[in-house]
Length: 199
Image (cartoon, rainbow, N blue to C red; front, side, top):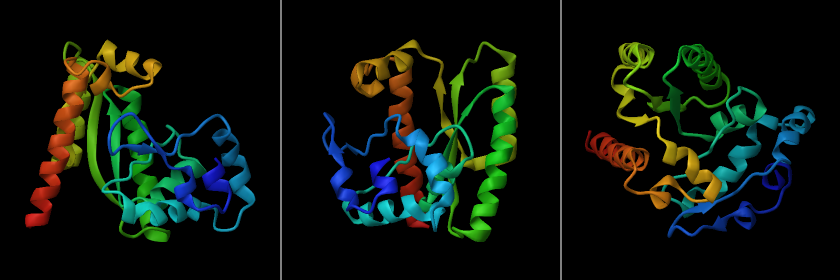
């Protein structure tokens, strides 16, 4: 909230974590007020871009974790980002939200960030025992083709427990199915980027 609403140097807000080379700018409940306060600000959709642009030289990757809504905070993220990684719950209503997001991205490309792209669609909360999960996965792959990651994040109790302990799933229980899936995702992302660089 303080980084977004103020004019201090963004580096002031970057904190180290227990994981080597992983840094965060954490949010708290104050951020919920930013959605309302941004409405009256000039260049309100550019606030996060200022922060990200200042930090780009210092980091290989910057991930922006967005709320599951298409308000001003998410708009700020879309304007600041190079690409969007879309986590999609394998449930029916998630498909409707996905259509809204794609429409919003199209408008952001036209008006504010012409280089915005889709990094990939990540199927999450997947339960291969249900017909619905399989159906959603098939429909998403048919529509997004090679933009859908091969890696699928399964429903996994350990993934749900990790945040309550304040650590990433790969540190909480590296042998769990969920942690293994995220490691596979990281490898797949790096492999895709290497392939794009070669092209």
